[in-house]
Image (cartoon, chains in turn brown, orange):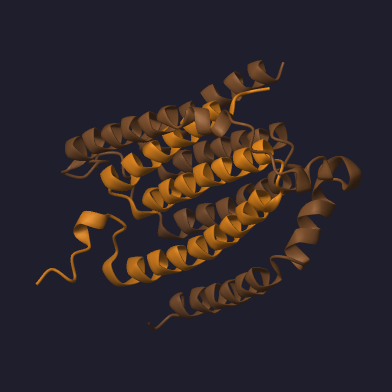
Amino acid sequence: MEATLFYILATMLVVFAILTVTAANPVRSAVFLISALLCMAGFFFLLEAEFVGAVQILVYVGGIMVLFLFVIMLVSVREVEGQRRANRQWKTALVLGIVLSFELVFFVVQGAEVFSADIIDQQFLNLDSQTGNTETVGGLLYSTYLLPFEIASVLLLVAMIAAVVLTQKRL
Amino acid sequence: MVDITHYLVLSTIVFSIGVVGVLTRRNVIIILMSIELMLNSVNLNLVAFSDRLQDPSGQVFAVFVITVAAAEAAVGLGIIIALFRNKATVNVDEIDLMRG
C-alpha cells in the first residue's frame, strides 16, 4: 500500500517538476509547481510528518504561490509565445544537469548500506505515538531550537522590510 | 515500508530538474520557481531521514527551510518588480548592467 502510493506520487512529482521547468507560459509553470508541491506534501504525510505537510500546503501553496501569481500578473510581459524560452547555453546546462543527477544517484546508491544500517536513536523512539507529531515538533521548536526559531523570525522581518523597500515607486 | 534510498534518489532527481531549470530558462520568475523546487527536494531528504532515524529534529529543520524559502521568495519577487520597472524585461540574458 505504502509502496504503491510512493510510486504514484513519485511519478506525479517528477512529471510536474519537468513540466514546471519546461512550460512556456509562467502561469502554467506556476500551476505545475503548485501540483508538484502538493505531491511533496503527500510525501510528508506518507512519512508521518503531518505538521510539515500542513505547513507545506499552507505556506507554499497558499502563500508563496499566490505571491508568484501576483508578480506574474504585475510583470505580464507582452505574450512570450514567440520568444525563445531557453538561453544560449541550454545544451551544456542540460548535459551538466544530467551528469549531476547521475553523480548524486551514484553516491546515494554507494552509501545505501550506511542508511539501511541499524542507526535508530533510542532516545526518540516512538515519541510521536505518545504525543503526536505537531506537539513533538512544537516542543522541539520552543526548547532545543529556540534560538534558530527567534533568528528565523528576525529573518522574516528583514525580508518583509526588504520587500516593502524594493517595491517602492522610486528606487 | 519504502526504503530510504528511494526517497533520496527521488529528491536527487527533483533537485537536478531544478538545477536544469535554473541554468536553462530565460524568465527570472521561472528561475525562482526552480529554486523553490530545489529547496523542496532538500526538505524531502530531511523529512525522510527524520522518519528513518525516528528523530523529529529533521522536521524542525524542514520548517526552517520553508521559512527561508518564504523570505527568499518575497525578496526575489521584490527584486523582479524593481527590475521590471527599470528595464522592462524579465529575461536574464537581457539584464547585463554589470557587463564591463
